[in-house]
Image (cartoon, rainbow, N blue to C red; front, side, top):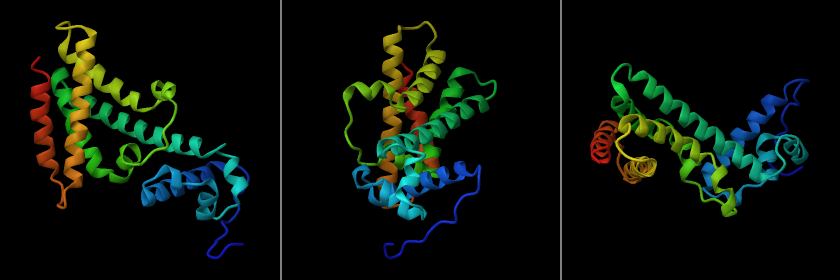
Length: 205
């Protein structure tokens, strides 16, 4: 047994789900500390949880599946938050729903910095280009695209809607990245005001 290893109390029958969550939580912590997917190993994750390496393989076949699960969960949480913001806009119409989403995106990053970093700040192992279309980031893009289409109606074609949706999302990400990289506490209000300005610019065409 390696120095510093603390064996986890074995799960009782039917508690495999709890162990899986512990594995995911440990992997997330380790990714946050290193910032590099390539530094993560299933053996190290097992040691962090206090279980044997084969126990990890009962839940994840390899590192790629473990990281993919972490990533997908993070994107699913963001999608749920964005949809909730749109629904919470009430009867303000599609434009107010989109504005609420843009503001919530900024708040999500500030309120969940570790989860946001898992999505966008980890140095990834480059994968095959043909897997791009299956990446969970497209779930977020579809939410933006649907909201933009609702605002623009029949004004332009699908290509323009897609261009505006990407411009809006990528620019919001830039606002967030700049805010959190500064050596000062980020202002949520200032970020929301910038998101409002960006939305007005993006939706003028």
